[in-house]
Amino acid sequence: MKTMKQRFQSILALSMLSVMLMTWMLAFSAPASASVQPTGELTFAALSGKYEQDALLVKGVFVNMSDVKINKVEKFKLIVKDAAGNELATREWDNDAFLTGLSLEPGQSQKWDVMLPGAVQGADLKSLDVTYQMTCTTEKWDGRGEGVHIFIDKRKLNPEVAPFIKDGSMLVPLRSTLEALGAKVEWNPETQTVKATKGSDVMTFKIGQKSSTINGQTIQFGVPAQIVDGSSFIPLRDASEALGCALFVRMHNAKSMTIAIVDKQ
Image 1 (cartoon, rainbow, N blue to C red):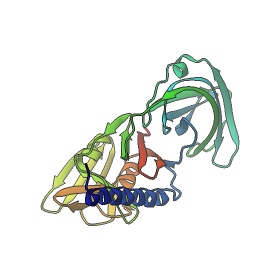
Image 2 (cartoon, rainbow, N blue to C red; image 1 turned 45 degrees about the vertical axis):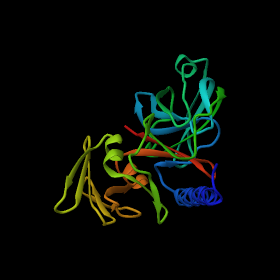
Image 3 (tube, one colour; image 1 turned 180 degrees about the vertical axis):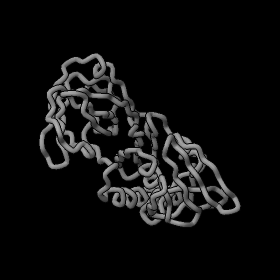
Image 4 (tube, one colour; image 1 turned 90 degrees about the vertical axis):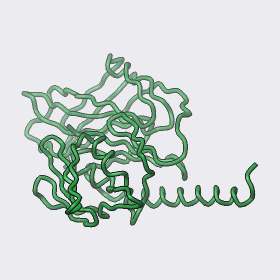
């Protein structure tokens, strides 16, 4: 049986976690082109788009940020617009083989390439806006506990040390997170410089400094990468977006948050 002191410590720890999650959620809500605030049971987002003859090919992703398991999508209607709000294409699916086979637990994601024939030509496809309607089959799911749950391309990240929030940024273990994002990590102990290479993207930064470079261009982290109690940490959002990933975040309650990171390639 817990003593009064132990109960107080447990309550205090949960209260601190709630404040940390709320603080980070507020910070995360700042506008960012690669960040998405999901709503509803299942989120669909456009990662990129290109023309193929008279059709528009949209590389998209379904992300389950809900509290239930998605068993299938029975009906789906998609409308794609450019950044100016001009409608480019629309399409509907009813009992499509891919969609009815979709099965996602909370936090998991699945990419989907969508071909939209007869799309309006000549639009700027750098930023696409999508609206959609769908009918899903779901089931109850009780697998989530308290804390921050991070998924990278469908795989749950289980960091060796716990993430923490500093000055509105969530910091996560450096090497394991970058490797989970698909980057090769090189560490120079003399200069305390990190080089992360993912495909053709090269990011370099120095412990303790906000300034970083990605493919030779300077960017600024919200907070610097840092060493705490012998472990190296990096700001999650900054590193993910620099390496071409989209972020999805949802706070389920005061004690539980899910973050899904999807490679845009």
